[in-house]
Length: 134
Image 1 (cartoon, rainbow, N blue to C red):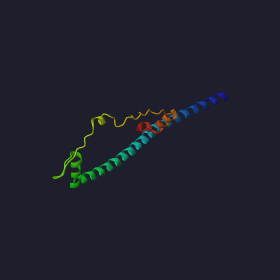
Image 2 (cartoon, rainbow, N blue to C red):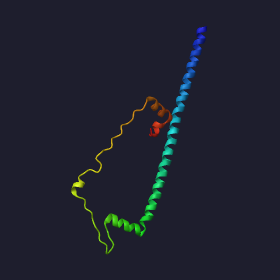
Image 3 (tube, rainbow, N blue to C red):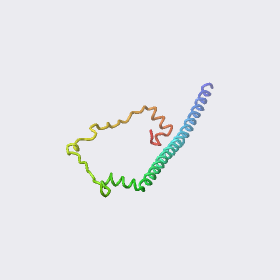
Image 4 (cartoon, one colour):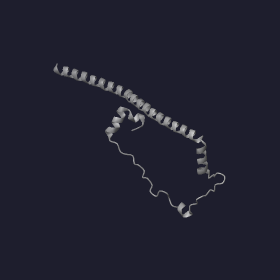
């Protein structure tokens, strides 16, 4: 009779462990999706801030382009225009200077860094792999 009680306890323990695993796994996937969604919202808010800053800078540029001084500066720089009575000069570079590369050293391509297995597991548990930033 002692073996039957031990067997019943083992079965009960196995069922409880199986239920615990199911509950944990059932909670991980929604948790991952929630974290990934929050990370995407944060990324979108950062992009929005950058776009708003860029929009403000472009609005300032548009305002500057509507002044006569800026129009004159651009006409002189980009089109070589001069005011009546002025003499314009053009500087021509010698052809042997045009053949030389401006930057002889090419930047090296970055190799993807290897990640430890536990980092991949942590990214999975926290949903970082869903957000695409890890």
